[in-house]
Image (tube, rainbow, N blue to C red; front, side, top):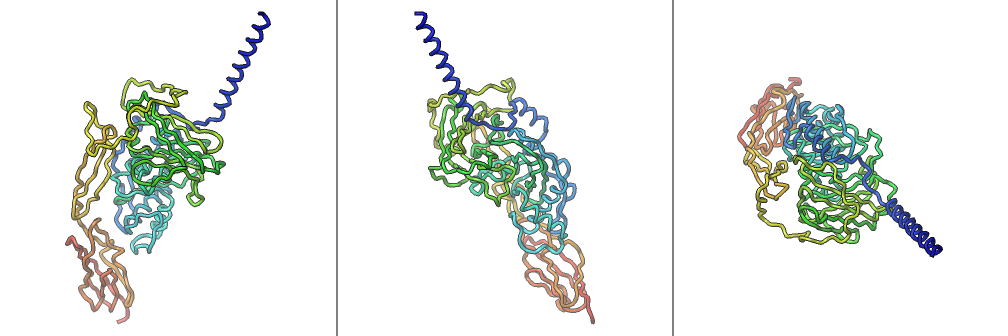
Length: 497
């Protein structure tokens, strides 16, 4: 009996050792996010203490004038946009960034040039307007191709959170490139610009040394008002050694303890997905060399479940396989940063049920006219301009409740028309020409109807605003807008009599 007991004890110890090795080995081959994990309380306090909101309006210390004056945002407007970006980076577990004057000048010039030339592009084309300085033009061309750009948002803070971080439209959801620039671990400085409806954030900065990898959005603790129902999830690996992305899959599981109930979604490279502004989507790719994402590096994953709404208390588990030999796993808990008395850092379940009760249908058909949830205060997203205002008609902006899906709308006042030349007097030589269209500023939505000269024997003007000097003298050149507004300048032609 004594001998048998010793053998049994040895067998138990050996089994325990084997289980420990197996368990340790399994844990060693699972990766999580390599970023700073702030508690819910820390995130709530950070955002509260920042004092900024998504509705902060941008103001100018120097008003931009189309074609002639670049303009300058107030210090308060720049700092508000910077703090909104830093709020987002703090949530994601990344370092804060600071303002850089040169980058800000180039961002402002980019907004100014796009506004002046009616181009919404990273690659400005055409000739510099005559009344624009060469430095503003050069800065604008460089700034446009080195920045995140947006059009139609009422302010910079909305552009940052709803536009560049959201990246949910069909043109951007595949790469969420604007988001990945905002969440670039190596970014140390930035600058902002705004002119008309054009908003710009300088993005090409790699001035910080960072070991952060596997940057996720939504983050591990996620304020529910910072993430809309249609926004895609993403993970930037930051690992350039991962070369094969042909067999990647993502499993997204909502725990049954969540207020929204249990749910599970699987995304895989074995399936085909179409990039769209809504609905289920999945993409995994390596950074192309021309994209210049050297600060983020390595493959990135984008996935979006269809017909999902996020509520405070919902907890999701993410498992990603196929990105190298190691599984990547992490959890995301949505929370109300304005709620009180919540546990600042509850420990997520380390061993969630791999086969949870499916609960409610994870893909319900959306109600075309969602009804507000009784007894709750709406949590409205920032206004989105759905119809820009013009001189001829009012515009419209809408906002959506992130809790119940209700939509509200407001009218945007019709713009007041105006027309103004950069200068009142111009001089040209006999036989030479002057392009006055590039020296004219006017309200968005207006159009040039007619040009005329008071003395065609001295100077003529064609339908494109090109003035030609015929003989010495003076002529008044008048432009008439479709709105009825007029602007007049004097052209003096000089030369031999």
